[in-house]
Amino acid sequence: MSTPAPARNRVRPLGDVVAAPGRGAWMGNRGRLHDGAGTREVRRHHVGRAWITCALTFRDRRVRQWDPGHYTPLFFLDEAVSFAAGHRPCAECRRPAFTAFRDLVAVAAGVDRPSAPELDRLLHSERWDPSRRARRLHAYPWADLPDGAFVLLDDEAVLVAGDGLLPWRPDNTYAVQPVPRPGTGRAELLTPPSVVRALRAGLPVQVGAPGG
Image: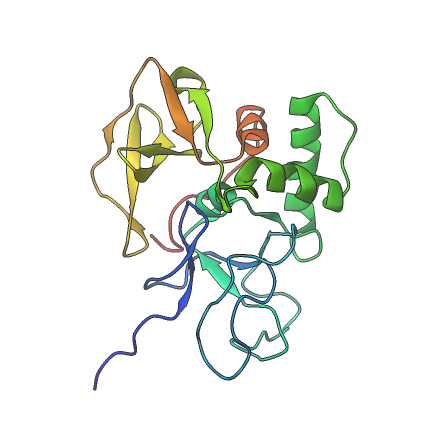
């Protein structure tokens, strides 16, 4: 019996939606990206600015995949990938995580606590360049990067983990062996700067597949 091909509903650290194995630790939502005609074709990168990360289960709700009138459920290997892609915790199913995220973003930026729409506007400005319709990258000192942030290294998404960097692989896993982390210079940052500042201020981040 052949194994069904993975659906195109996993998210890379760069934020694009790909077909890859493994369900992952979190579900995501950035609007209805699929055709809505009974197929599994993804036609849009995102709809709107509210990109959220949800728990896989919440109050016994059931989300239908590829429903013609529903958003497209997306899946992340872990929370570090979801942050790198530009998503934030859901204010409903992950209220404590959302509150911690909002408060630390505010503290790191020296501003009042933003509302969910204000957070969405901030994150969208940091992750997306509308003029190029492409991912926005940011220069950031290697020495100041916290664990859990993602950067590009030789056009490859890698996770900061202590003195090393763990490449994210196309099979939706991490490489077993880390590569050295540069000690000087500036990295090409994938994770939005506001999230990186929150990580530096103590925001916890889940890393790795469940049970991994």
